[in-house]
Image 1 (tube, rainbow, N blue to C red):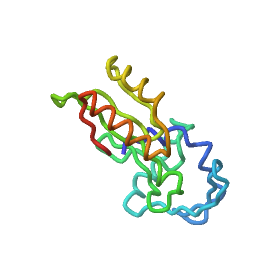
Image 2 (image 1 turned 135 degrees about the vertical axis):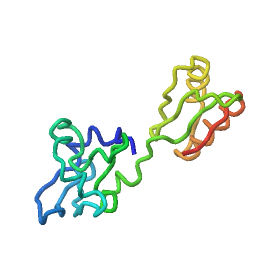
Image 3 (image 1 turned 30 degrees about the vertical axis):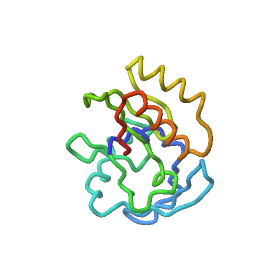
Image 4 (image 1 turned 90 degrees about the vertical axis):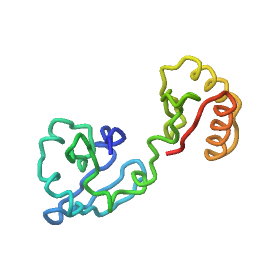
Length: 153
């Protein structure tokens, strides 16, 4: 519910027409598919505030602040497949003592300031093979062997 993945989808999720107060015909530019989106009933009060998309023109038109510092999708039930299957964080990485060291995203990119972890990750990325799930397993295995704790998201 951080909304980071959606902050730059304004050009990818296009509202073609509005069919009702909360119902829209849309297209997903990256996949070339059309879909109908209806704003989730529990998020309509948030959707009615148009200041967020005005202040963030590159964000998805359906992204809104949901209170308590959360930003989220107001069409979660009808969001396109690319949104439903997107994995922001694949795994969190901790030291043996439980200190957070970084995370790996769905694109298998490491986000960490820990130089030892960065070096291990670079080595592992040159060695891994196979499908994405196999690559994730290989990364996890190598990080565990190096003494890190890994938690899947």
